[in-house]
Image (tube, rainbow over all chains, first blue to last red; front, side):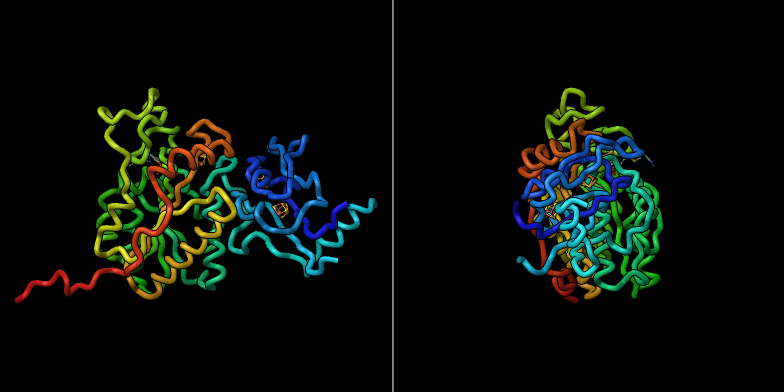
Length: 76
Length: 270
Ligand SMILES: Cc1ncc(C[n+]2csc(CCOP(=O)(O)OP(=O)(O)O)c2C)c(N)n1
Ligand code: SF4
Ligand code: SF4
Ligand code: SF4
Ligand SMILES: [Mg+2]
């Protein structure tokens, strides 16, 4: 398994399932959840968390500011 | 706990934080449709104001259009203007409080249709304000009617067979026209559909606010945008449609970056 170097936290209730973060992620980390939030949206989540590099591409395109991004400093 | 969950939890720690929601965006859920460009641009404005440390000195003027409630989301002072009148209202605020940062935020119906006169004259006067222009080529708020910026052949609720030049005239490239005015200091056209485009737009918005501080004239930032509800496409398909159809008509890049013109060029001889 690839080293985990980044991780995102999606605010499930704020997410509107627009899919823009999923498309913007260069590592195919994200997908829309089969489940829906209280507004009825399929919220974004880390389907392949081990892929995330913490690049912030997803949070850059999110219109609803619902993604928080973390990245480890060390690569080992 | 699984090994993977442990690994993720080891990363999600304050010292590893690289991006979180701007402190200037409050807890109100934005009313915009999923994927709407307005949300991205709101965030960039909030981030720029926060990073410049000018929260207490900034006054926004919100439009009539989907962004009418912009004042609900960014924690600064706001004034809502009548339809199209945001540049006139921003002019008044800036002239009374010249030490404040003042910006208008308008859609294409607001800025390029009903408010055309206010737009042109504010820029022609070289008002020291920032104008943010969200061009989604449609009246989003009222149900997707044709705007001056609607493309030829584009289907809207008032052009069900596509915009027809014989009947509806040509798409109005208002940003190109405004760049001709001597009062315009900085005129640029950007977009927010990719991470790289978002970062460029943020830089342009920051530059616009800095130009205001330097009293160089009007700083105008168009953001070519999507309206997935009005266009009747998904947000992802809207971005693609925008790249294929909007960008050839509304090419991205700086149109002017000279500061307002020197008044002596216009002065009578005696
Ligand atoms: C004086 C007046 N005329 C017309 C309207 C109806 N109206 C509301 S929003 C709008 C157009 C909005 O389009 P745009 O500025 O492009 O904003 P968007 O919703 O696309 O962001 C119109 C015509 C109004 N509210 N007031
Ligand atoms: S931070 Fe980068 S790699 Fe991680 S989910 Fe977001 S876009 Fe994908
Ligand atoms: S971009 Fe934001 S709102 Fe859209 S699916 Fe991703 S997290 Fe949800
Ligand atoms: S109608 Fe269009 S502009 Fe208005 S919120 Fe929805 S997508 Fe955005
Ligand atoms: Mg519009």
